[in-house]
Amino acid sequence: MFIALAIHGLIILGIVFAPTDQSAASSQRLEVTLSHHQSDKAPKDADFIAEHNQIGSGTLEEEKQLLRNATAILEDTQIKPAEAIVVPQEAQAPLTEIPPNARLVTTSGDSWFTMRLDQPEDELPTEESKEPQEFTMEMLSQEIASLEAKLHEHQQTLAKGPRVLRLTSVSSMAAADAQYIHRWRDRIESIGNLHYPEEARRSKTYGDVRLMVSLNANGTVEEIRVLESSGKDVLDNAAIESIRLASPFEPFPTSLAEQYDRIEVIRTWQFRKDRITSSR
Image (cartoon, rainbow, N blue to C red; front, side, top):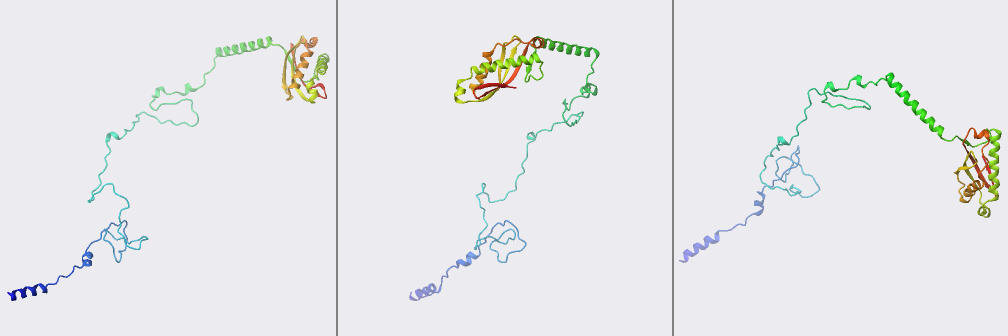
């Protein structure tokens, strides 16, 4: 019995369990990666296994496996060929067919007409239709008669209106007519100085007012119009009031009344040192 136990003990003590070498096991692992571009030369010490050669680059000191930089939408372990996209026939727009008798027409500049491509030849405008229409003798006679009627109507309108003479100077007038204008001016100046505006005298306001006075043949005033204001209402109103107070004036002399129904006298009325005078 003792001998049997001793034999079993020797057997047990003679067996030694050696530790597993982790580095040897790890050296058998394959590092596989995908290369993004192919290099002509093979690297001396490859860090990974790929489908073709690629020399590493970058800024990291330690080697890193090439990975994707974004999460893929679809995950799969097998690479499958892409299927071609087929466009339905009804989705394609049909081409517009050009009629066999269509003609291409080009123009330069402005054109007075347009033409359809499918317009028949018998409907196309001809050279004869584009020529200006000739006037016949009857048409010319009607046109002349129309112009004569318009001229006669215009003459009748002028005949009904008054004969007006506008005066800016008396140098070209006859002596009798010029004397009439001088007397008309003297009367206005005399009345105007008698009614010189007290406000303008106190404030020593001076200025010029240019007026147009329309006189009828009987000496009455038809219209007074301010052509150029003095910029001061007191002077403008004083000039107009002087003419109204001086009217009515003498009737036209015979030589003037035979030619004109109305005269328009344009004068500048000056307010200086408490006096009113006129100039052409």
